[in-house]
Each structure stands twice: as C-alpha cells, then as structure tokens.
Image (cartoon, rainbow, N blue to C red):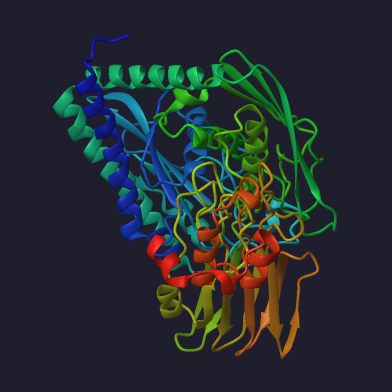
Length: 568
C-alpha cells in the first residue's frame, strides 16, 4: 500500500480516465463510418505492459471491448518485443477478439525510455471483406467466409507505416477509402493518448502514477470481494436459449452454474451446447468479458480496472460453443451470444441477490446491413446499423425504452445521417407499443422501424435473436415482446426461415425491411402496479387499452385523464 492521500488518488484516477476519454473522442470525430463516429461502437483503454490487464477505460467506451482488449493486448505482448513508435494491429477472434469486424490497435507506450503502459483501442469496421457485405454472414460455417483475419501484426515499426501490410488489408475489403479513414482515426487516437499520457506523467511523475495504478487496482479488488462476500455461499444455475445458429434450425443452450465461495465467484459453462455449425460460436475472450461486465453492471460503484475482475473465475471447456476454436465462424459472438451470456449471469445473480437484479432486457443487437452500388455516386456502400430495445423493469422503476445492448454504451446511428449517406429512407421509426412486459415496474419498450431502398440494387442481411425466446420477467413480471423481422420484396412480404436471421436478401427500389426489437421483462406482479402509472402509459400510447385491461384490469374510461397528467 502506498502513502498517496485520497484526494491525490482521486485526481490521478480521473486524470488517467480523461486520457482515455480523449482517445475515444478522437476516434469518434475522425472515423469515417457512422458506426464508430455516430454510434460509438468503439473503445479505448490503458493496459499493463506486462500482464496486459486493464488500467482504465473511458466512460463512453463499449464495455465488452474493455474486457476483451485485455486478451488482445496479451496476444500483442506475446508477439513482442517492441520499440517506441510501434503499433500492432489484430482482429483474430481466437487471440483476444470478438468477431472480425472489431479491429484492434495496440501501441506500446514508452516514457523516458521505459515501457510503462500499452495503449489500445477497438473500432467496429463496417466491412472486413468476406462473402457477405458487413461481415454478418448468417450461413457462414468457417471464419474464412466472414472476412480477413489478422493475427498480431506490426502495422508501424518505430513510427514507419508498413505499406505492404496496409495494402494487403485494403485490397481485400469493400470501400478501402473508408477503412483507411477508420484506421487513421484509431492511430490518431493512440497518438493522442500517448501525448496526453506523457504530459500527465510529466506533471505527476511516473513513479507516483504507477503507484496509484497499483493502489486503485487493489481498492477495486477489495470492493468487489466485499460485495461478493455478502452473497450466500452455494451453487446457482441458469439456462438460456438462443433462437438458432442460422444454419441448423435448433435452439442453442447456454447453461451456467455460479458457485459462490467466500469472496470469490466462479461461472462454469460446461453444460452449454457443443460448437455449432453457423456463426453463433463465441470467442472465449468475448464470453469471459461478458461475464465480467455482467457482474460489473450490478456493482456500478466499483471503478473499472483489472482488480474488480480478479475475484471472478470463468470455466469454459473447449467442448462448448462459448469457447470457439479456429476455424469456427464467430460473427455473432460479441453481438448476440454475449448478450445472452449476460442474461444467464443475471439469472444466477437474481437468485443470490434478488433485490438488485432487473428483469431480462431485449438481449439482441439486431445487426442489420444493406449493401450495393449507389447509382447517384457510382460507389459501393455498406450500411450497418444496430438497434436498441427494452430493458427489464427493476426494483426501483420501469425499464428503459430503446436502450443500448447490455454489452455496450453505444447509440443508435441517427436516421438523418444514414439517409444522407446511403440510398435508403426510413418509412417509420418509433417505440413499439405493448412490447414491455407487465409488472409492478413495467419492462421498457422496444422499437420498430422500416427501411426502404430508394435506388439501385442491394443485398440485405440481418443477424439478430430473441425471435423465439422472449425476455423473461422477474418476481411475477410478464415477458417482453419478441423480435420480429419482415422483408417485402417485389410486393411479397415474408419472414426469414430462421425468424431473426437472413442472408443476402436481394432488394430492388421500393423493397423494404421492417424490424421490431424486443421489449424488456416486467418486474413484480402486475397487480401491484400503481393504476395511475397504467393510465399514464395508456395516455402516452405506450400500452394499448386492450393490453392494459388484460394485464392490469384497467379500464380507460374510468380514469380522469387530467389527474393522470398532473401526477405524471
């Protein structure tokens, strides 16, 4: 333990976080694709140069990336040694990755000739090559079909760009100009981090800052162990299901046993389904990171660094789909499987700490892509967007409507930006009435939106979930609505064979896609809900009168609307 006083420690903690915040802002402002620049599908962090463990992250960085990047940084460290000015690039799912579209850069940071940290960031590139534009190939059975896989490779050596590596990458990707812009944004973010961290160490001294990092890590570990020690010792189990893998029309099981022993907890996924044929296998790093962030969600007061993860152990045998091995397809890894892993962890924790865990959320990113050549510009485009949905009700209030996925802190790309960049129009975009599960605290609402192709020919794909297994309520709460997907092509409307998954749907001008995302489960018995809150929901159009009567025995005609409006 050091002798740093609490005030100085708080200053140093926030100073380190601000370094990373500037890295994230740099990426956001310079990236070419709106998934990174508008939706914030990116993250940055500072990592230990020896262990690769996370030191700190930014407030708006994608949470799952922070945990995953520990493994990516460790893979990069193992490929060293490095010198000042080096930058490593990788996206290998089996070496600390998620899916191929999440590109990671790692920069060794030297101060006064000494390696003191690793700076790293991740950004979702909207295309990485492969058979299906956007990378979400629903029918992929091998990673080769999903795009270019890059093991830890030196992109810069002592500040000099390796043009050969860059050219090989860009020559195998759609819209290489956009990919180059995204890459430069991430490199600029690393350089910003290096500049700010140098100034920070100049001001406070490297020994003081490094000592503070050690102390912050120890404090986070003690805080997490304190919370875990309050849980009753014992074994808790949960089973969750995903719709299908996109190839075989059968559900996929996630079975987890949570063992609480003293101030530590172990999550064992040995009972889960075997590796699947389609792209719903998960990289082990993504599975572990999902467990970390699920537990962290329940204890938000603990600062994020490697210390808060040390009391958590995760067991994932190679015999299950949650520990994908080369060359299994993995495009649904971080986007879909991770959401369900969070659900499984929450289900276990709800048994151990029933007053703190919310009902299930919508639990799917609903990855939607549309790609073609825009006749107005004669350029190839790849439009990718993910969607929000309803959070589960929780002990204090209703669930959030149109919230980001539990693995992220992202925003949905703005309709106006997408319409400006691509030959599409949103015919509709709205909250989805009646999608939140009934309860004392209602589940949040999902959203519905319709996208129309305006010009040219295009292909569209979607990789989503929650089309067959609804988000469950808790403590008597009702289920949230499930995801629905419909395409209308040549005047014919159809639902994909695998409900929430479709690949390369050919579209012509006027054809549309219509998607409704899932709502959150309800918390507590619907009979305990305040009638005035029910009336408020009906007046706002969030719950229909028929649903209110069925779920809450509420009759709209008996309610004084003015009184409801005053109380709301």
